[in-house]
Length: 353
Image 1 (tube, rainbow, N blue to C red):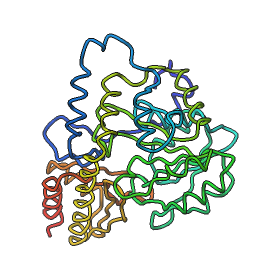
Image 2: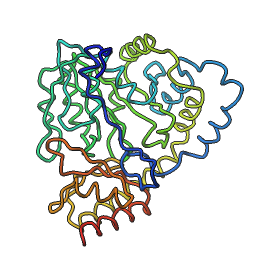
Image 3: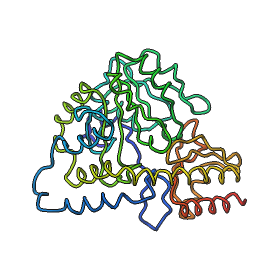
Image 4: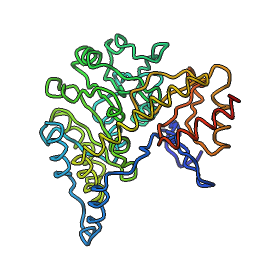
């Protein structure tokens, strides 16, 4: 710890990203990336954007991308905010809508960046334990708080929240912002974007990293009524007006336009997910019901940490969280059918099934 760090930095417990090893080739099922490539149209558009215009700053307002997203979701462009990945959009949201005087509510088992953002912004989080089966205790999120953040489906469990449950939380928190983080919504969840025009306190955050196979270009966006979007822009323009580069803007726009391609890829992932669930259950795993592109799995006889290291030794990466309540679970990204075959075969050797 450096003497030059200020008090805020000293107190931070930063987010730890999934392992990105370079010592050999692995079956990489640890960071919830899409196993299929981006749309060929997206790749071609990005190639075309590599031209002499790169000497110029990109559009600070991402107007063309916001217009495309607005048409896709049947909203107005002034209801769309674009950021450098959904993580940046989330960070700006914590800065914009939550205050130290009123605790922001999120679950005990959820995307761990929420706690990091709360600490960075000197907020007092209200941590709400999930139910025993990892479902959301809806009533607890309807009690007094200074705002709510819910990933739907949840990470790392994969469980989704119904539209009626989200509506109940929105109704109970009309004076505070409710953020629904829909990073994984396109793999089986129900989006609350149709609620936006009815709820001025609703902010929906999405990413192109998962469904759109574009984790490498870092684009995320928020959807909500104009007042919320204006707040995000005030914060963004106090940090960096040019958050999205020209190549990312071009690729993101093309990805939203080619939704047909991505729908087909999502169907393949869902099919593989359901097949994998059955195969893992057959060798003794318990699987939390998932609406995402990953599953949360536990084995009754062998500890998750033991399996995690044994898989890594066999060239298969999954995610292990050494945290209360989930230390005997593995989060496993759904890869291609071939990759899942390698996973299951490795598990059979480890478990001697």
